[in-house]
Length: 168
Image (tube, rainbow, N blue to C red):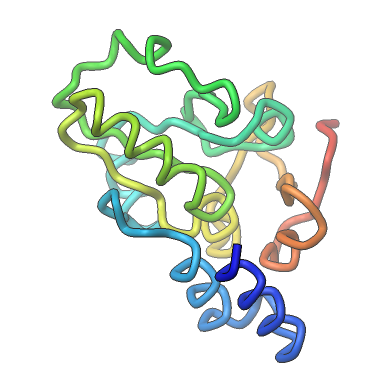
């Protein structure tokens, strides 16, 4: 909680915006513990393009329905159940993504503790993905320029896409 408060105060004082890569990375580094290996958006894209990874989305269903990375499997965070992934080979590369990397790190750690051997946390999550201009799709698989910001506080880190709380 102290780290969160410090980051909030720092961002308020500096009026840090999402365009500030240093501010975005400082915020993420203050929240994640590096308990799971991280991979950046470029690395995620390469793995997905090569077909060498399973991508799971640790955001809640309403976030996923607004937009998600093509092919991501929704697993949620609050009601995550490892049994839902029982068909995935434990030696397969699994990338866990969320908004920025905090929730995905926690789900990634659960996967590691359950015996999955190659788990990676998507550093910067869908916010970084869309800030780099990579595509996202809605629940119908149609490309959209919208991202669920989690809430207005976290939404400051979304630069290039519309912030949306409901799918269209």
